[in-house]
Image 1 (cartoon, rainbow, N blue to C red):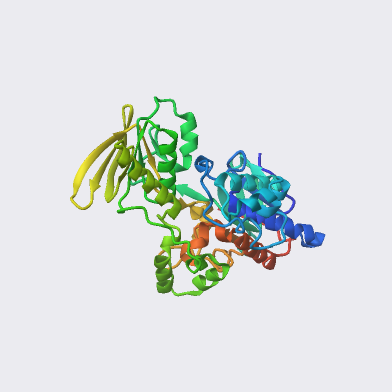
Image 2: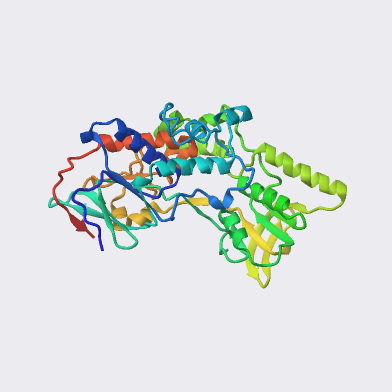
Length: 437
């Protein structure tokens, strides 16, 4: 049965990962200080039964790649009680963390911080509710000032604005499907917990980025009797550029400059600074893996094998395991490698927001390459008849740069979207609309 609303929400958020969690916090802080007439109404829908952020990669000891100060609130509001330091105080670990003398908490601890924050705004979230369709609503003049979001089960949520944050979706090598013995690293720990076969004697890890290196490291530590084969096309793991000047690409001001630049300049900046985030590995982890490879050569028992300069041609499940075919690039020699399990650490792609929009997507304005035009405030540019606000969190690398889907600007980005919604607010007593199919 569809939910009936007397008035539309000011906005509906689709997805409740860190990006929309940061937006919920910004909303909560705004409403706490605003006069009753200026408070916004909102609801977030999330298909998971509870908050979770890459649970399958919460590897013991793995640390964040961003400073704890780039949490869900501090960059937007340094005195927010939703910041990581407030979390530590609440957990009675503030002094201990200070004594730890690090800017980079473990991923497990930061996930616990996210859950702590999510619990505090849980009244804004409907878990176990997957958004499956969006329709525009028009008045008699043809203006679409509202959208309807249909969730699994039939409820329909009306809103004057929609904020889509579907997160990143795992990408497998071309033609390869996930199966019982072929995994994506996103579900590593989940799959390990469910694995029912004999203890693996050989693992194959595909990829050259941070996740691939972390998986190789974890499997090598966890399965001391197994061989770990790491296959990648580079000659070696490339170190991440986290130097102070290069890190300016993640500054809020850099988004302004990137958004206003020409397409040629955007392409150049992206190419110059790919090494800050894409297919790169923390130097400490690179050195640790090299130390292990060298030590095993000294001992004459090599379990960690780095198959570099190799291009993967095929991965498929076979009885009792998985088979990888790869080509050594310098010579073209092909090798078939059988293992118990293959883990593909082959990256992610943005959630298909325009696919969710359905017919509403026909009203989205696009650039010369067919990509959606996105304004500086993360609002999708639409035809004049669509006055409902459609916002993206993620999938805006072509307009806003590398920080599009990263935590670095989550707090600031959330504040900018909320401010945009406040600025664009229409009369809540809008004329009753009808569905536009």
